Length: 368
Image 1: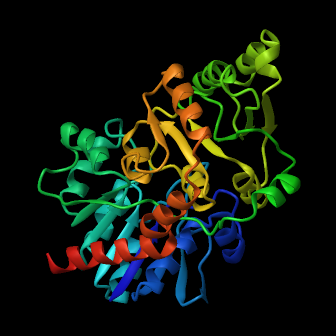
Image 2 (image 1 turned 135 degrees about the vertical axis):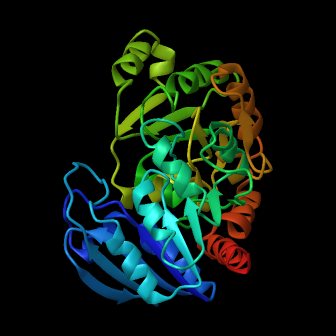
């Protein structure tokens, strides 16, 4: 089966092909996972300059598109990607993202069925009028969880007869390791040691997790929370909360930005992974935690339900409910589920599993 995977977003930094694949690791990871599952894969990447390379059985073509927008936006000549795709005569096309409707419309004219994959987009807004006709022509849409398609159906942008596939956005190459060695390397401790990875913003809701830690601490005197984050919108509020509560401050460690290469040791060193998101397209940090065998205690939202097998591993808590989070932290601190977590990851979320799921979806849309 010949598959073309297309990324319309252009790197704002203008990095060279090899450097870009390192900066955007999910691009080669998904492509190589599909290749391992038996497909012949070519990746078309919109770029400032044309280039080509091949690695690990996947061909990469960088298609030059002029652009005006700042950030990782699309180019101005969407028909160039479509022409490249048509020339490859694929059996199926995998288009990344619902926020590039002009490119998607052109890709749908390339002569092969198109599976478009959501990456945390929202229906409505100025793109809605362009998305409606484009989504009428796709052969399928992939979300991490089927429930994530519901607002798109209600908005009228996603037709009722377009198939929806529940497939994780990506996977990870992180692996489990020795916890004691990892704790020495990462310099963390705790009984249990909780790990938070994510932006400090209202959607991720770190304040609920802080309240949960405070509530659980009476029952878990050795509890410690370690927080790795990049964007820090709520950091001043968090720091005020810690200054006003010495008991909480003694348990919370603000690590700031941690290089991705150092994250694997953090995950391996943790007992529980905690996150209070109200909305996620997928949950890359949760996927990485599961790959390292960390038991999750996360919010009960569609993507996290899908990634944990409806709570089959770890526990789910209602968004914003600190007491519920505290109860689940206490319960799982006594019985972490490392073996079950690793088994679940291998069967459902590993690169091999994601590759198999994508190839099955490609075959389904090709048949239809």
